[in-house]
Length: 187
Image 1 (tube, rainbow, N blue to C red):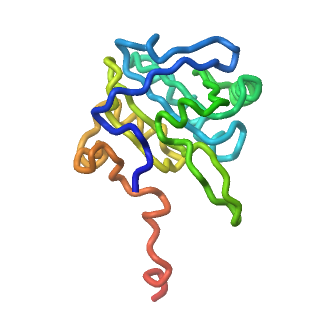
Image 2: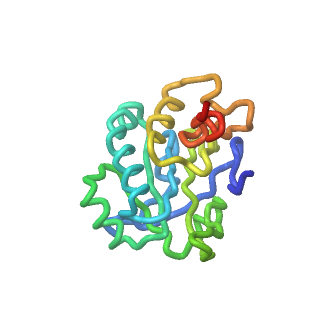
């Protein structure tokens, strides 16, 4: 089941948001370059920290390939500044406290945790072409190993990793899906 409002082949919704230093960053600034745009739920949470560190560790490759990397969450620039510093991040974190961009991309969704319903950002990544067209979408991202999966796509890995047969949706199994069912393990 997909939830994103934006699919491969669509023009990416334009935006201008503040980064961790309070500077305005516009998607239009990156015209002519590929962009990895990743949405994440919360600064300094365990999964988001793992994902951010992995993107940090792959960033030099992205930069050499002239690919911009932008992280977006509903946290404030002040929260982003602490998170950016704590994790020694080398790419901008953009603040969408009003949820306009999260809603435009369809990643602001109702979630359920311990029986409590709340609105939050879904972990989702987009690769945008130099002309602002969505090339690839990953929904319900497993934070661990995702940066490597994005890099594999960017460097031209093809086949099941491209999601071509699913309209750009990932076809690689998630880590939890690779485990054998409990009944199959017992013999």
